[in-house]
Length: 273
Image (cartoon, rainbow, N blue to C red; front, side):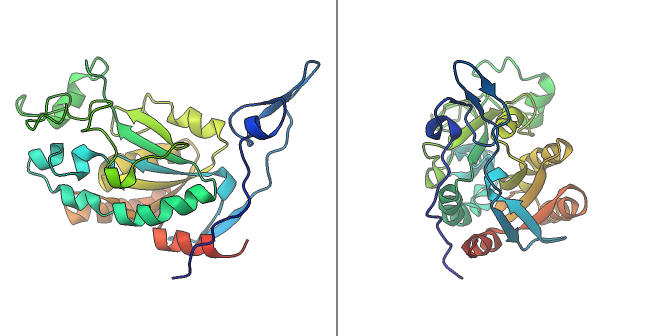
């Protein structure tokens, strides 16, 4: 495979490069002086990248694209986490780690925002109604949301615990953005949509676990909100039966967006632009 091209020019945020700029993103900033506020400041020119995908190839604008990585957390992906404790195959959820280790540095170099969307529940579960608790503790007994893991490594998917942390192999870097969620969809009752809009994002690359659950429902909500959605199939995983992932990929291509993989994205980024 062609070595990905690492861009040598960068567009920093408006607030750090332009005197009087207001706002985090050059896509949406205002320019202020003592006498005037200019709301018409033009965004930077697009950086189009053509990616081989299904059901059609897609052209995305790197300056208006983010990658959203969902739930690659210890509770799902690590020995001693919750899925491991309840007898699930946590190893199945680890397959996105290697492709993301290759892809994320290249996306960061291209100044594509990396957004981690993870379960991060309140310690008191005050915003978790019984139907959500039942989902993960349907007999009323056992270890469910907010319950302590028997190995002393924290409470299941509790914010700031080891259980809810991103796996060590993909630890977020300074400059990445983290969003706590407390439902299967990363958009429900979170700031994800307002963050994306404030950054001027129009297209989203999706990765994470589980393909058929939190990835799918975050992606479908993004589709309903008007974002262009691209699933990175090799950067998604599930411990569900194989037909669940197959149906998810089929439905994304049919109804909700496009499907490609990290290799094709890296090949696209390696093309001179």
